[in-house]
Figure 1 (cartoon, rainbow, N blue to C red):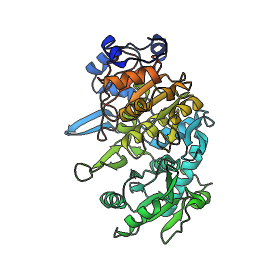
Figure 2: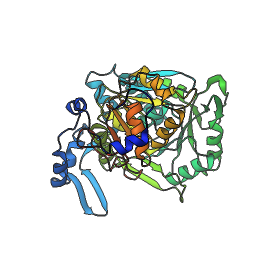
Figure 3: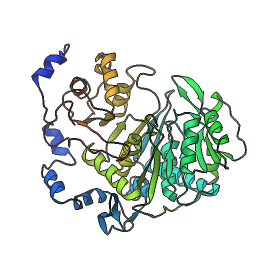
Figure 4: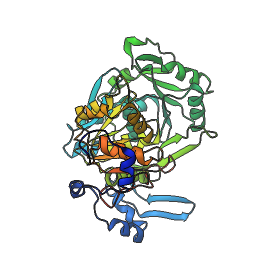
Length: 443
């Protein structure tokens, strides 16, 4: 499109209003047949069987969709499965125990890689620890953790034993945590001593302790030691060290609890910015099928990929497109603890180059920040591993779309502009990247 010099985005906007996916992408895409639109229009709701078929079921469903009690709709009724088994165990059984499941990059440059074999051992050990503390099937476990590996491990451990988790964004206050625990009836909390923000150690356990003191029932609390000597802490009655619990239960076998498709997988609460926090419950069969299918069809995630969604797991995007969707497909998902501009504004592009990231899913707000910082930052890095770009969170304007397309995707990566809500659990409006034109600023 140019010789590599400065780009007049305004002229480019007037010049081109739609973009076709590259032939090389279409040839290798998970979904590339345009007839899929006719199938979904003509075979509703049976068309959604293709989503459920991405999973392993202990018992197949009797009906795809039960509308007999509308407006309550039940998906894959009669079916039984376990989400943790689908995200972990079955990949180990398929001979992929040494394939990277999680790559974590910490705020001080720490890195950890957890293979699917590691993830099975870790989730099983923490599942045994939760059972030791008295957690039973259908008990809600609140998780109040930053972006550290113990958060997805705890989510999967809860799923393994059939205990719905309720993740509370780590940036929320003690009062917000208290409100959500009261409303969910949770008697179990997993938190940490603290975490770093822009190099400063923040006391997270202090917020959790204040919330627990205001709750008029006993709360069993598990504390992850994130900061070590950086923020010494002590444990009081009903508080347990995460590492001690896990080591004590390291050899225990915990078989995945078979759940009905309509059993809750998790409950999360809306932010409460426009009113009281509202509980959003997602069930095991329909939610996991939707997260896996949209990761497969829209984000084009493949098991061999390294995939990065830059959201926080405390939000629904992180639940669906950092944890459950990618892990159900057996890919490698990145968990990044810091902000995009710390310690440098080149951090994102440095990591995409280092880890050969294939799919990058971020927010238009972040893209506009990247634009403001300048295209010279990504230009210094090799981003050729990228195959697909995505946006989520709010509408993307055409100017930001085209900047993303040119400077990050090198005019070779389709962009999926996705719209959905916490209530839907997964994408509702989007293009399929290998089918048809993309129009900047229009999902």
